[in-house]
Image (cartoon, rainbow over all chains, first blue to last red; front, side):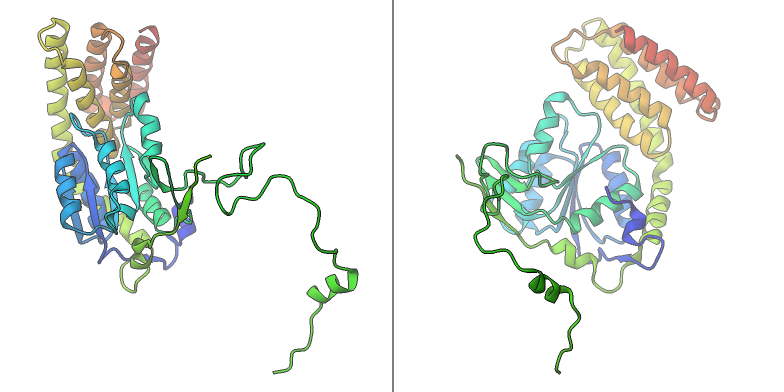
Amino acid sequence: MTPLRSYGADGARKINLDRTAILVMDGSPHGLEILVQILSGFGAKQVERAGSVRDAEKAFEQRTFDLVIADPDVPGEDGFRLLQRLRSSKREPNCYAPIILVTGHTRLSNVQRARDIGANIVVAKPVSSKVLLERILWVASDPRPFVEINDYIGPDRRFKFAGPPPGTDGRRAGDLPAEVGDASTPNMNQSEVDSLIKPQRVAL
Amino acid sequence: MTAVRSFRPENRLRSQIATPGGVLLSDAVAAADKGLDSISESVLSAVDQKLLAIEALALSGAQGATPDAGDRIYTAANEIFAEAGAFGRAALSEAAHSLCSLLANRDKEIPWAAVTVHVQTMRILRQGHVEASDAMCRAVLDGLRKVSART
């Protein structure tokens, strides 16, 4: 993950969350307070608190959010399902809002669910302000496209593109076969290659 | 083979954070830490309450009086892990995480004796003179790891 100093924390780089509507969900009131205090320090002025799945659902119906920060492990409720429903709801723009999952100790059964609900990134608790800021900056510049397939909708889960699986042509329009075929046009000769890198006078 | 739809929805956060105004990143972190300082006392006091609740649940759970004691202890320990850790109580946070791991497997019977050791360890780690000494925290955690390894 990109360290904060790479975003210009030592210099004049700023972050403006004045107009950013953020939904924060955490089943623990103190966990919620920790996240809200951190976001307020970052200058966020529109932070909606949700202490339960029901609160979050209601908020998604009533407001538009630009960022969701959620601990899906809400006692007695299924926060994972809520976030998955949000992604597949087609209710724009909330269904495309960047989601930062904040997780404490995670039962093995929930690890895969955390990957498959369509969150942009997972942040492990205990949360520090520096790490949360890094992750917010990261999701703001997340270059991955959204993909929709079967019951998954969210950012492409491949952080690194290593080509389609061996023996297949891939499923995405942009996938190229792993094996390179024969050239379809003649190779350039040396003078054509030279002309690509030779400085030339340009008439203005 | 199933087809994949790939698209790029608008990321409004991207444009918002770059609009003129705002705060320097270093100032943002400093202000957030100041905000955390302002709530540390109340959160750590709540951590103490959760410890007491876990202690009572461990007692009644071991006697079979509270059927969902394991789940409730797991939830409280998970909160202590996150909340003590956010305020620099790393040793207490680690002990709480260890208790969560102990209780995470719902198929196994709850080892109440080990739960009790975790609760006692967390109480010790919350004592002022232990919290202030890295060497004492390490020694207490070493003992806890040995118990966990045997469970």
